[in-house]
Length: 342
Ligand code: NAP
Image (tube, rainbow, N blue to C red; front, side):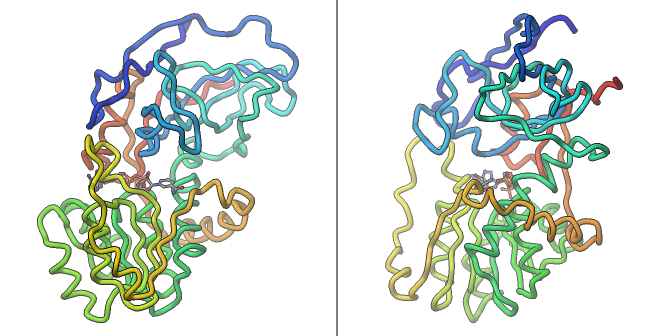
């Protein structure tokens, strides 16, 4: 390939993300004159994450917004195609925060250096079951949720990448676990493959009524990926000294008007609840510890996971939209190509 294909951020989205928010572009491959320490990477796999929606708004967060007219930012796995850095030989695979384009040039002084991927690792795994979503689930449910055996745990967004892992870790640790997800197929997967105790299809069932039936003694830990009305309903079902892990609020990311917020925050006081947010970056020093637990659970078949793999550079923007319509069944990925032999 002689060109560098890109998807640029064309405008700040108003409300629900749309394909018009992005524009296709082509540039030259940035190969000339690699300085000492520089790398040229070719992206192979992209991860799709709800956080990308936040990066499109003109609002400071834990990362700066993507600038208008610049390629959209994404986590990706890439292959080193030219290297002036002996730590990253040509042909090796790396992972990092790159852009929606074929090629990325990383200079030696870039503070966001890529991470090498061990030889033999399937290139999709560092973006899915051995990636950031599983780590988020791990630290969120264990360190923030502080689950203990016998707890009743409810997880929203339970069939997604973070939610399914958080729910299963709670199950592995001896909790009774109820997942909330959109659709019969997702709920069946949660029960049959993830071995949860129950699942609520929020698109067809009333969460409040179902929790009254399923959790008569209250919910000890709520791992929340959704926010909005779901959080408001759960506040009514928490038991005394319950913990709410605020992992994300995907129901609000495309809202034109922010939700007025739970009208029942008084429950936090009355039931002596703890509601705590966290960001995976807070736990960056402990990734090895988490992987030492997660890997044997996956290899031993205790932790089920699934990937939703789309293909083709042209389908990148549409694939991001899948997250916000619930079309994704599992961790949303897109494959550009296999690594090339060197
Ligand atoms: P995911 O759950 O695999 O995919 C997103 C899912 O969200 C969709 O499949 C859909 O599932 C659900 N959803 C979309 N719009 C919704 C709405 N309006 N109301 C209710 N549910 C909706 O994505 P993920 O990567 O695992 O992320 C899950 C959550 O974790 C997000 O809130 C994300 O921001 C958060 N997160 C936080 C951190 C952190 O460090 N704190 C890190 C990573 C992710 P249904 O079909 O079930 O509706």
